Image (tube, rainbow, N blue to C red):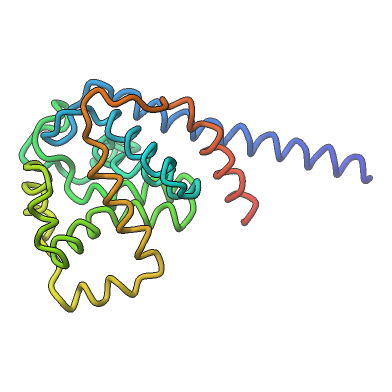
Length: 218
């Protein structure tokens, strides 16, 4: 009986591992497909932006959940359709051209999509926050606004503008506050032309291990 249970358990573990690998491969392929897709007015592609953000997070010693969040924080820009259902519309541009200023509420789209795939609450919260972090920093530090690129200033107009003082106070009480602000740092960093950093394959095992760990919690 024990041997049969062990065999059954091993089979389930293998099935779960294969599932996690498939999710990781699909997401990485999605990013790979964006190697020639412009990143909302910047001089880098969507893929370059994702890789640079993840590299920045890892080089600063953040944990794997933060690195994963940095890698996929803008995946919502690439999800113009999901299971045959239209996702939020593009801002001032066509989805298939990569023009304009990206997907409306792309941070929410990104977070909801990764949640549906089994990523942790922390990963999804950090992804959801990278726009609000920009709003926080521009409200808290007016000089930060001046440091933004022109496309980032433009998208801020569509994202609600700087937070007011009451919103700033509430934002600073968030359990992930420091990491959310760091997400913005990675986002701002990840706009460098011809910057050398690890490719997508570097992150596959990190993603698979994270998904496997999450599956053990349920």
